[in-house]
Length: 423
Image 1 (cartoon, one colour):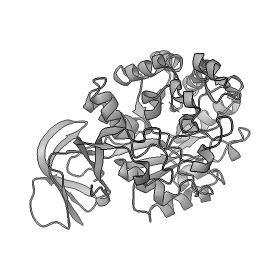
Image 2 (tube, one colour; image 1 turned 120 degrees about the vertical axis):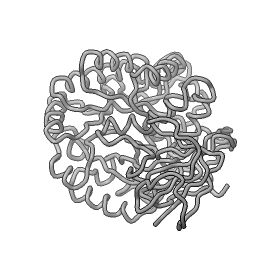
Image 3 (cartoon, rainbow, N blue to C red; image 1 turned 90 degrees about the vertical axis):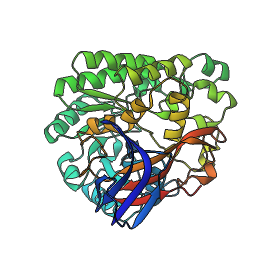
């Protein structure tokens, strides 16, 4: 199949390529301004054409929790958010701790129209933190990462063994860096707001302590350890020190930790309940600074859908998680780029080249022969967030009604048009 994206401004990690028609053929970039007949035309005039985003941290809830999300809804949501590839987490039911489950995910995702799936597998069997899974067999089945995300690996000896095993195989280890005994039953950031609301808090020390442990084990073993969803100034400071000391770690932050604070919970609305928790204005400022000073390597969504009934429970019992795949880019573009906190090129790097470097994948480019994973962004038009339009099954969102710019209007994955926003 041959496809043309007409009249867009082309921008990738190699620079601004100007305004051209971009041609795609048989799953790869064919070239610029080539002419000739095509099977599909995409009008990109006045819009930005750029490599599709990579998300190393999504919860697709499949298998076993399809009432919250399934492969079809999750990968469609990813494509609608401009993502070409997503890495799914292992905390499903059953847990992705068996090669057969990995192979089944890969096979079923290949039949779904949407973003490309690259599954992660569990570090420990059943996420219990007691016995390692068979990393070699999981990798052979298609796993690209190991993680118990959602559950910190508390046993340092087990975590060391996991890192040694992963280093031998070239697998990335992604962490959920919170000390479980310090976070205890905390449902929000421990501080002045939690004290005022009378809710149990989760201190930033829980994150800082475990980031240090995970980074030191990375240094000890040589494993590539990716610190997921860093949420606090203290956690980021520890990660920055570890990097400067030679630890082979990379750092992820999320859209919600970059745009929301613990003050959001003053209405006791669990839509803002997430782990690690939303923190203070000072923490948000530190994370934003880390986007430009090299402390942060990638932005991952930590897309975590739940049913509305679950999120309408009280603050103590409602589950943690925010569904944000479809709103991530327009939110960050509007709040950070248009807000003057971050150049557009750096935001794109954190969604494209940064995640690719974490995984050791080729940098996404709009050059002949490169994989045809492309998104078209409308940077000029403004639209209010409307959860009812989301492809994800989780239609509730903290940003409902907020006017944003930068919405993805088309996404191409492996040369196929998998998302087109008709208005």
